[in-house]
Image (cartoon, rainbow, N blue to C red; front, side, top):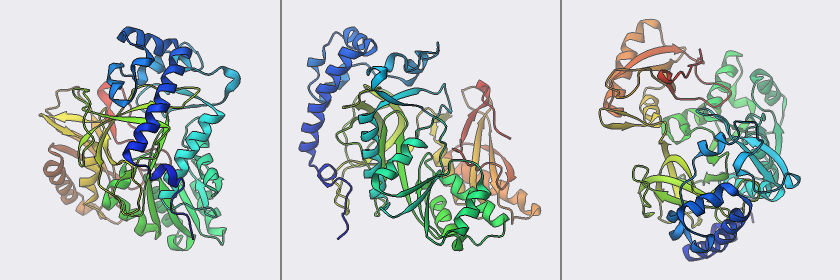
Length: 446
């Protein structure tokens, strides 16, 4: 009989058991950070507390938050890890960096145990998503510093999947290799790359269903949570898809199970997560359907531990039981709070715009970019670039622009200026960014 969970003991703990495990490891982690990190010792001292004052998660609000910018600034002078190095260099075996799409990439260190914990979280998530030993996985994330490359590759290997480190680029070569294999295969990529891969296959007159792609494991973008976007990928390829949430700073891998009722929190015993109101930063109770921001504290990290690190991800949490039997927290991602923009008092997330535009498929592909070309307050019409499907004749463009504008006005509460761009102009092999603040000097790829 096939095992149901990757780590049944952890994934089926009761709430009381989780609290006891987290509290014990939290106390040990904070003692370690106070001894080894001048940066975090100063945070404690400034707040007038000692690690012994923190007994469990309820005491954490006594400690100031950590922001990514604090850590990245400390590396600006060329210091390898900066203030966030707690283990000696001879114990550090890997250096990686966050994606850095909106700021300077942050370098992070890992010891062997840190790597093992990262892979443990990844294996829990991937098992929930349907990955199994014997699967052949084309790993199509960037292997250049980014954790989604080497580190996520190691998660698949930990689980027992045969992993092909393909990386990004050479899309035609990837399709040729898939076509020559007799075995069914799996893809690990961003959702938008699965769309782009299908477009290239069709340009090359390939039969997508004959390429043997039967499972897709997706991460790096939130688009798979849009029903129309997910169904498009599944229909194009004839595959079963699974969605994964993770962070480069901590791993924190969380995957959805076959019931698709949100991500199952996959970091129990490794990362403690608080729930706060992003506006007031006050703690919020985790109740079914509540919306807030996650704040992360590592509880057994050696090289680059993090204490009360703000995620700036807006989440909705769910506490009801899942039919799969996993007992922990479930959540879905609403968008990044630093990607949110306010139009005449209304909060707008790019993920919401994506959901609106997905309803206009198949005339639109679902790929888009929002351009904020003037500083707030935003009381102007906002440029939105949207991919038009190849089969749509030009004489239909005017009506399509009108439909897209109406859909966004009604669904996302702002007035857009729609620019239609050719299919394939936006979706890429790397993460597809949805929001550009050109008034801050950010450049939109052409």
